[in-house]
Length: 288
Ligand code: UTP
Image 1 (cartoon, rainbow, N blue to C red):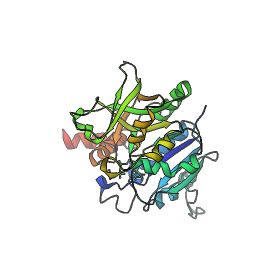
Image 2: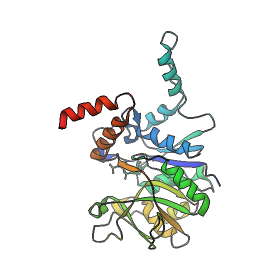
Image 3: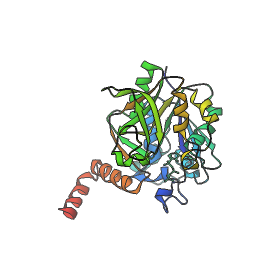
Image 4: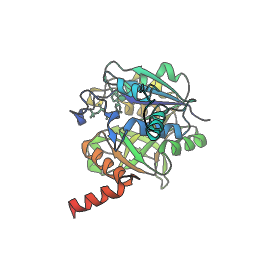
């Protein structure tokens, strides 16, 4: 079954990225010339998703404006290449794909943000993408996961090996032992200390959920960091149905963190068709 709906929670504080995120959503920060949210949206469209649900907060108007086909520019006296570019900007979202924006009045946590999308999700399975986790991969991670979902019909969360001393930054998982890249989840803890972490696999911002996760989200109360944590709902759902942890193929950049964001910009700039070579020459001059 092709899943149609994907939720983009974009209502967080972005406090790690202040002051840039004081009036601008972190998801609008550009990597080279494209905002993070556009990379995420393109990954979802490429994976076949056709209903995009944005959970936005108070500084998020620019996200809707970015995707609206409303570049009101007088194009009568501009050159052909610019016309083409402006036309492309008005068609980032293909016609068969729809966007819905809902508000999270207060950023009470990722679990709370997802719950705001419940009336639009209805009773279908759905995906969640955190745009500040930028993943560079040959095949988009959401596409990799959607293919796995077709085979298993079970919730899947993406994970990657992390340095155990960074456990405090992640949801850390426990799984049935296996050497494959898809493991059955047996436990999950939000931001444990290195000593308490059940493994060295941390959760990354791509998920596919069976609809039941929403009922579990409704039952949980404030957890770690005094937020409604998605992790706590996942902990509950694994007692009733199989959830798999998928070790994806690709390189992930934590762009909610300043260093991760800078690394992503360097890597994507080096790959840029127009400026990559010149940028490499500049870096060599600078550091060698
Ligand atoms: P983060 O954990 O990165 O939190 O959220 P944050 O508040 O955005 O950033 P910091 O930690 O203060 O720097 C992960 C994702 O969940 C969204 C964020 O926008 C981000 O995409 N989120 C988080 C919400 O939409 N609402 C929330 O209440 C919390």
